[in-house]
Amino acid sequence: MRLSHYFLPVLKETPKEAQIASHRLMLRAGMIQQSSAGIYSWLPLGKRVLDKIAQIVREEQDRAGALEIMMPTLQPAEIWQESGRYDDYGAEMLRIKDRHDRDMLYGPTNEEQVTDIFRTHVRSYKALPLNLYHIQWKFRDEVRPRFGIMRGREFLMKDAYSFDIDADAARVAYNKMFVSYLKTFARMGLTAIPMEADTGPIGGDMSHEFIILAETGESGVYFHKDWLNTELVADIDYDSDLQPFVDKFTSIYARADEKHDPQNCPIADADLMSMRGIEIGHIFYFGTKYSAAMGATVSGQDGKPVPVHMGSYGIGVSRLVGGIIEASHDDKGIIWPESVAPFGVVIVNLKPGEDACDEACEVLYQELLATGLDPLLDDRDERPGVKLAAMDLIGIPWQVIVGPRGLENGFVEVKYRKTGETTEISPQTVLTMLQSSKGQG
Ligand code: 5CA
Image (tube, rainbow, N blue to C red):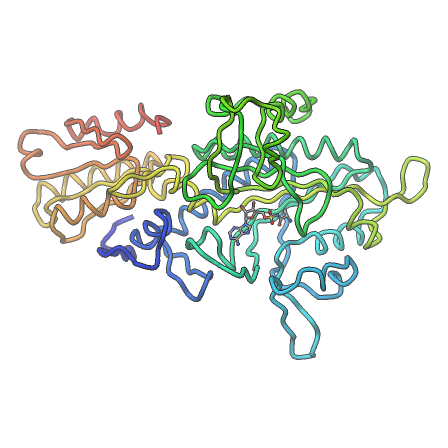
């Protein structure tokens, strides 16, 4: 991508409405623009990151055996009346009437919709287990939308729904999602701690929130200090028994504040950490709550109808954009982990219009394009200081800085955004250097 043909409306001033780093940086880096309270447009740079995050989520859901579908944003009120949640959900639900005066709503979540799909098509236990997910916009008319996309009213969620014949089988489905969440977040450079949590309006008796640590987080969290050096990634065989793996993680104390009782905390004060965190995912097992209310039954092995056991599994896809920034930025701007960076590398032409610079940049650009490193070429006619500051702000992992003086001496400068470390190398060796350090960040 050539920056001269791109739309990157970076802001010089720090927007005063933004209270936390991620909100400030997303506005300054031209990633989002507020449309109304808690509702945002995603501009090209933001959209790229959102898509990268969604893609990692998708790959890990697929790997864990979930099947992607797409349910609508607007749902009929009837199915929510069947489950009993239409009235319970209260003012958070955006209710709409269509031209025929039918009651509709903008979905805050999709348990009812997916249960309706299931009961229409599935009749036998033989079709189980089944896990269906989608990545779709949700609307919750939050009392206090804040922190930009972090607590929005419209937000992008991955929500998966599992269907099983009994509680034991549902536990297997729950474990798959539990483990896949650890992997998903680790791929984004995040350490997410699963914590026992309340189930709120989703209901159920088993639930974990996945929380990343950040001073600006809305949740208070308590956990054993061992969490700080627990390695989360592993190769997972989803067909194997995942219970030992889940037990290993759930055996280390971690609770969201509503579940932490200081009087009865099983670990010593010296081992207890109390911090703030951001909830980026939440998984629930709620048994037959929706299937019984909505008649989602299958015939079991003995031919008798049984309501299916269900769980639901959410990831805040748009919230993750902010969460990753909270976890990875400095006073100059964002520092994207490579896996979600909007571009892999930016080539900064310090003197556009000068033949040697233009030519060297063009050769590098074509070379990096061809190898799939997803380069951005800053070919704008701007002062070097302005360009370099903007590139630090938008946080692309690598910068290749091309200027006339360097070229005269046969080199360009390669800067690693995370450490600020720079190396002077010949333009011909840039590709090899970037390829050999891929995965470093
Ligand atoms: N149906 C279940 C699981 S699919 C559900 O809705 N769970 S949830 O309410 O916990 O939401 C799932 C995730 O969406 C949360 O963990 C959080 O990361 C994200 N989320 C929830 N509310 C918002 C919001 N207002 N703005 C941005 N992200 C949100």
